[in-house]
Amino acid sequence: MLRLFAALAVPEDVALALSARQRDLEGARWRPLEALHITLRFFGEIPENQADDLDAELGCVTGRPLQIALEGVGAFGEGRDIHAVWAGVAENAELRQLAGRCEAAARRAGLAPDRRNYRPHVTLAYLSQPEPQAVAAWIQTHNLMKSPPFSMASFGLYSSRKGSSGPAYHLERDYPLI
Image 1: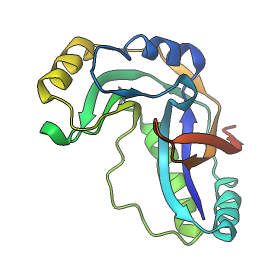
Image 2 (image 1 turned 30 degrees about the horizontal axis):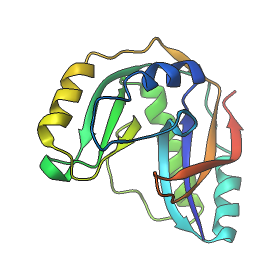
Image 3 (image 1 turned 90 degrees about the vertical axis):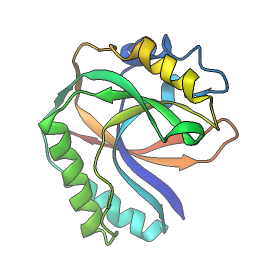
Image 4 (image 1 turned 90 degrees about the horizontal axis):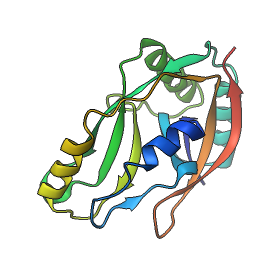
């Protein structure tokens, strides 16, 4: 079984700018630069033969290079159940279309539909029962964050393996947007 997702890797210069915000939140397990990405579709644990089908379907996804900008920050969860802080992605119709095409590829490969609403973001840290006031203060400090637009000319299929400081990701395949 492979744990897979499709994503856009955050360019190094944007990741470096985000890393300057990865501080001042006690207990946060900050994600390393190479792990910063925008998920297009999380596929979950799938058998290797279905992963091959998924790879073939993702290879058929079409689209043009995207211009993306990051905007704002937030958290997933509430109160002591907050489990992550993230940087938001400015509304982008082409990004949503690409995510929809990855969803369609997953269905063609036999995967169940994703029931969650697509909410593009870059996870900056994982949290475990943080002080809600500390998270609120961090969000207030960084909420006006904006990145300059950056271009994405490909997306990738990544595998995920659990580790003590959070998941480690490996690029399995890269798909050009032309």
